[in-house]
Length: 102
Length: 185
Image (cartoon, rainbow over all chains, first blue to last red; front, top):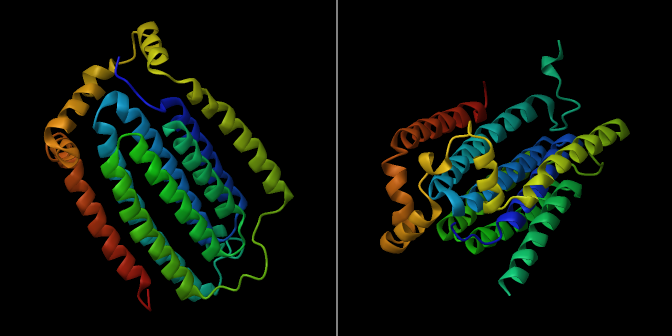
């Protein structure tokens, strides 16, 4: 059995951080803060990958690299969308952004 | 001692996330998020992933958070009123988070021994060692090739196609961001 350090606590911390990210997405209306909470969730998943990579080898680290890439792409496109919406509506409050509500 | 450092940074990460959610001002939120990222980088290094820890600081703090701060600066938001949702949303959030925590708290009890027992009990589950190289193997590899080499070898051999697809994704994201941020869409 390979030796691991902090596997349980790291997975627990990952769970707490993920829950906090979900709470932020559900609670806040500011679109930028919402994106930050998504980043918290992605980070929590990264932590789980790194913790379990101690058991299963470097594949977990590779997944973390991919998650980071996708997070960067998501932040770039998402923030550009927020900028475009802000030019139209002068707000980033999600309660005022209801273009798709028909 | 290592234990103390781990829990110190874990506390820092959770505190940063909580404050990020609760702060009214988006800039202050971003700064608290930065403390979460730094704490997580330290935890990655404690978990034996030095390269990932450094990349965490470079990519998240150095790139993504700077983009966030730039956008906040460009938008010139007024932050007089709170943007928390109402009591109905709060109740729904408490219920959802409660369920999530109960589900995820099971992970706390996860240990290699328990994992092995789980795999032994359910023969349908694929043997992880058949899919992934064992952790000890990668540790020997890291000792032989160095921290970066141990990561680069699988990235450019086993995961070459996903790696190339990622580059296409980044290209699409760059084009998309430029097009979206132009004056007229």
